[in-house]
Every structure is written in structure tokens, then in C-alpha cells.
Length: 234
Image (cartoon, rainbow, N blue to C red; front, side, top):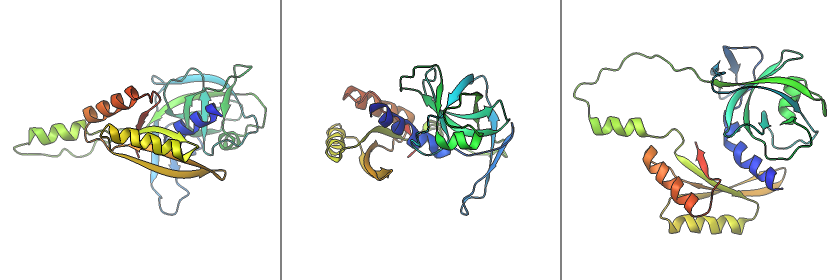
């Protein structure tokens, strides 16, 4: 139960950027959503992460989305997973594997397994490579008499201004955690959601106005005993 909760914590926001593609770099994906038809182009970054692994889908549906867990990964990453046997590829999330396995296999989600053509309990060799959205070289913006204080604020504004304190299967525990955050004078909210009909409550602190502000928030949260708290985008 504990490793499943941890999977949920790490996945809920890392998987918000997951998209499915076919082919190699540069990677292009068109969203199936009628509301979002923009293309997403990603570059492979093997210097960040490049792993050959044997993955297995154990038949458990788990949390939806494309993801893989690996014991040698410390922080969540956006990755390209390539099925060596058939050439199929998808963009997915990778995070640290907490479930103890009797073998050296890495776990893969049911959605990712189906997209890659991996059958249940069929160990499959894959290549896992980090990917990133390439930086756009837009037109240079000319600013006269720049406001140094304003520019500094823009530079230090975090891309992930919120902090995930935890996800709880008992509402009273989430409420207790929220009260602890309020005692620390931190802005906090509780969000409820369901997975397979089971309710969960997510406690989130933020938003932080600057990177330093966010850093101090996280420090206070961890000192309060929430060692697994981490930055999220929303």
C-alpha cells in the first residue's frame, strides 16, 4: 500500500506532461484533445539520462498514463522509451522504483506496455532516454532603462511554484496536515480526487513568488516532518 501511495504522489504531476509518439528524435506529438491541437517537439538528452533496462508489465492496471519505474532513478524525468524488439517509442515519465522485486526488472504501466506492444509478464528490453522541449530562439526584446529589481524577480520566478506536501487516503490526516502548514504561516490548499473509485486528498502549499521563497517553504515543510515534499507545477 505504501509504495502505491508513493507512486501516486510522484506520478500525479509528472504524468501531466506525458504524451505518446511514434518514431525517434526530433519527436512530434499531436494531442488527441479537441481543445489542444498544438505540436510538442522534444529533443533527446542522453547526457541527463540514458538507461538500457528490462521492463515488465505484471498485469496490474495501476495508475493510468505512460510511465516506468527504475531503482536507479532518483528524481522524476520526462523520457523516451524505445522498445528494442519492435521499434515502437513513447514519451513517458520515469521515477524511482520503490516496490521490491525478486528480479532486476523495471516496472512499466499498463498504458505504456500496450503502446509499446509489451505483453503481460513478458520481459522486454527497452532504451530509456531523457527528453526536453528545445529552447526557442525568439526575437530579441529591446528594453530601455531596464528595471533591475523587476528583471531579477522575473529571473528567479520558479516554474514549479507549488510544493506537494503529501497525498492521504484519510481525509482527517489531510486536514491535520493543512493545519500544520497554517501554523507555519504557509498558504495551503486541499484537493480531493479519486482513483478507481477510491477517494484521496492532496495537500499543496504555494504558490511561491520566487525560487528563494519556494526554497524556504520546502525547508520549513521538511523540518515539520514531511521529508517527501517536493516541487510541483500546480
